Image 1 (cartoon, rainbow, N blue to C red):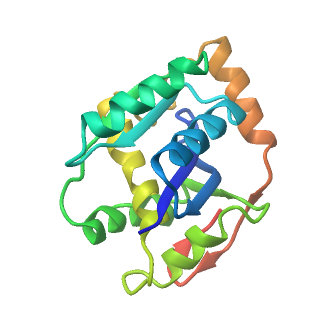
Image 2 (cartoon, helix red, strand yellow):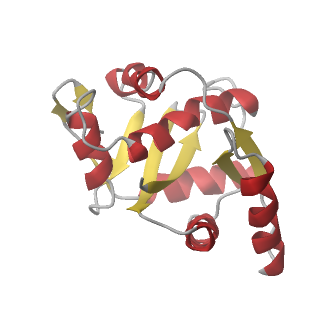
Amino acid sequence: DYTAVVGVGLNRLKGHIYVRDVVMDRLEPEQMYEHVLAMALRLRARVIGLEVTSLNEFILQPFKNYMLKHGHVFELVELKARDKKTRRISMLAPYYRQGNVYHNSSGVCRQLEAQLLSFPHSQYDDVMDALAYIIELMEIGGRYFSSAEAPDKNERAAYERLRLEDVSAGPINGWQFV
């Protein structure tokens, strides 16, 4: 199977989910740790969500060691598979229909878009399943869209960086890539 790593940014005030980077490859555990940490650093992430279903400490403990060995600490959130993959993935549809999801137009989202366009009959579903975990990650962290929230300085700076990113737009087969 493929491993998917998806870098996502949130703008809770605007209700936007920014898909900023995607990696889909056949990775050994050490390569996975390397890709996750490199992406988190590149995107200036604050939180890393790791799917731990059936592997728990066999994913978390080695990743924590890797992260600390390289001198970095991120908030780690354990994500557990709920329901079937197709059900998790289908829960992304309302976010796309409402225009909440933005894809980086630099081409990094091609695999995600190809999987979404052929859903539920995609040959591979790893990237869209990884993205679907954003819903659980937001729920666990109490991260909701709210125009009433006043962002702090760090959030305003993060929103500005996201606003400046190049994103693509256009509806395709019912999925709205904005």
